Amino acid sequence: MRATDIIIKKRDKQELTPEEIRFFIKGYTDGSIADYQVAAWAMAVLLNGMNAAETTELTLAMAQSGETLDLSGVVDLALDKHSTGGVGDKTTLVVEPVLAACGCRVGKMSGRGLGFSGGTLDKMESIPGYRTDLSREEFLQQLKDVGLVLTGQTGDLAPADGKLYALRDVSGTVDSPALIAASIMSKKIAAGAQRIVLDVKVGLGAFMTNLQDARALAEMMVAIGAQAGRKTVALLSDMNQPLGHAVGNALEVKEALDTLRGGGPADFREHALDVAAHLLVLAGVESDLPAARQRAAVSLADGSALERFRTLVAAQGGDASYVDDPDKLPGAALIEEVPAPRSGYLQTIHAREVGESAVELGAGRAQKGDPIDHSVGFVIHHKVGDQVQAGQPLFSVHAGDAAKLAAAKARVLAAHHWSDAPVEPLPLFYGTIE
Ligand code: URA
Image (cartoon, rainbow, N blue to C red; front, top):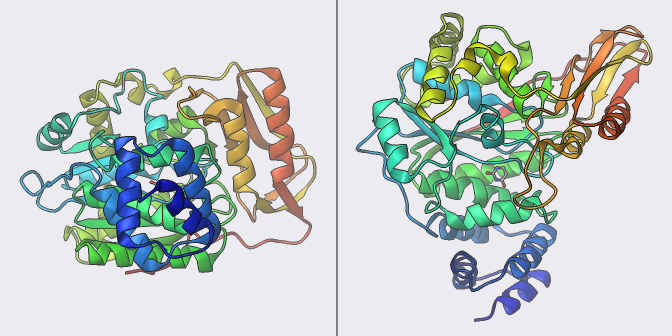
């Protein structure tokens, strides 16, 4: 078998056999198939798609490309959540400590930024000293001792996804339903998750921009979960505008800390509580969603979730004083408050434009392995449907230099679209797939 033939077959819109998919993933993992061949193949998959059988085979091949974790000796039920990626999506930073405060042991392996969407690891690394490279042994030990872990994928878990994820980020091959489904589900399966909540984003700032595609992706992942014996629920959530107000790594950590303190933006808080509630029900901690939501809300109000977050940061080598004093987090050299250029109702805040602009500021990567600037990003003050007066603060830009600030300001001003007539606020969710 030759990698080139497999690339050509997909280029020519043919179905790959299980043997071809396994050969390709094995070759990529062991280095016998080169990055540039995999980038070409990923582009062919993006353009021509994969059917359900190919996607399931790809998922299992990636899940089995390294070791797999069995958490049964450490936790009663291994829980996991995963977002398909969005702008301002700091949900994990709140949901994981909430679950821990509600009595669940949770060990999560997260990712870095992908295209215009931010990544949990990049956000957590805004806290000096915080390690995202725990070994398998450290992961298991911390899960046992502390009950909460938030780290990167250990090198030996689904290594094919580790490589492919970084390659897709910089080769324009992120927004493929088959590649997203395989990426997410291979990690969840390899990491031993038994109950999974998928936060499938839909809208301008998501990889799936319409509900039909997002639903198809969600159904594909729920079906893969079922085939692998993992109970999976997918929530279809809005990503037309940034979630919460903050976009950018340290700014998002600050917003997550506000939320863990019982404050934070209403949309982000509600979103996080809903995701947590689904996990608490799947875990059997509560039997229905309203009770689960109430329990999660109490953990924000009484400070127990914040306390779990502080313990997590300290356990992973981070400076926990940043949790109590978020103003110590990296701050940008230049901050400019941009006023509304007119009065009116906000019709659209184009989330993808905001995310792309944050990447240009340095919050994400242009090339594999690029360093990022944790301090930069935006605080978007309003939500779709808000009535805003001319001159009122619209958003703030946090930038490293004046040229980047000017470009970001222009791009994000243009990402705000106005209406003279009242506009309905956007919903948080569009449905649940079980
Ligand atoms: N999250 C992932 O882990 N992989 C993707 O492809 C997209 C979002």
